[in-house]
Length: 311
Image 1 (cartoon, rainbow, N blue to C red):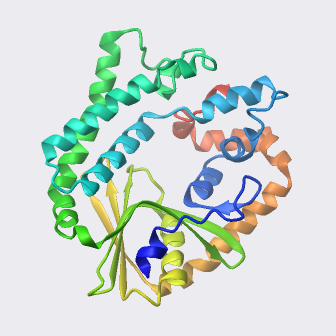
Image 2 (cartoon, rainbow, N blue to C red):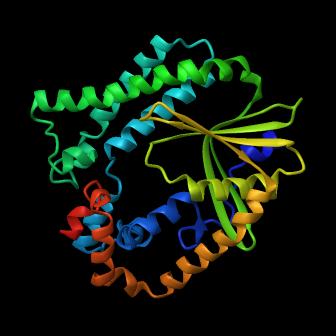
Image 3 (cartoon, rainbow, N blue to C red):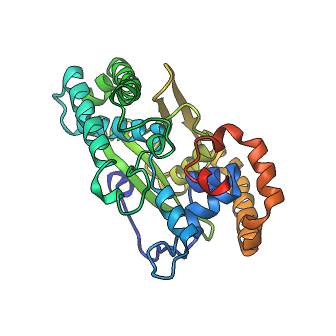
């Protein structure tokens, strides 16, 4: 049954040495080879006694949370809480989100960071001095900006999404789901925040909460292949819904079998390109390539966790 497939979390034969394809991996690779290296390979030895100072630094930077990640995390947790507790009002949901924000602030300035970070924080904006935990006024302006984006998002979903979700609560088959599957011999995974499946109509609706600058192309490609390689004998129709956090728009896409077939070879080509480059690890040390990437991605570099290593 789809309910079983959609909540499956199969980690058999998955380890850090295996190459597992995901939207995040493809997007990271396309944006910057150096960031990709640190995300997936360069920090593997982080906890070993022989770790160099640079790897130790990268290990700290890898787990910093950007403002965008912090907002996304709180919005997703709040929506999950709403779905799991169907009587929740908009006012209560907002109070719950504010409490998550408060706890996140305390957590990211807790003692666990004092062993590793010169600024004692797990928040990128504070680590790089954009905000100061010691200046109340500056910190409050930052917190209010974060809070406003979360509140605006919750207002929007209570107008557009929550009524349908709560009305059809018994059709929700996956919350905060991660699913592994294969394309040919390549192991892949997709993630989504929740999904609805009607046994009567056999219509599958997948929902993802994302920031406005999220690259959906690779996501749609992988998602369509997952649907039609694994569930085509169960569903009659499928729909992918993107709920944007920071703009007043949602995006609905029909996923069909032809789309999955059209994109199959593009995904395989991308995998082959990535694997060919990974064979030659020196590409990550190639200054000419990285300088070119830097020129193409100055805006992204300005918010990258690893920018301290590139300065």
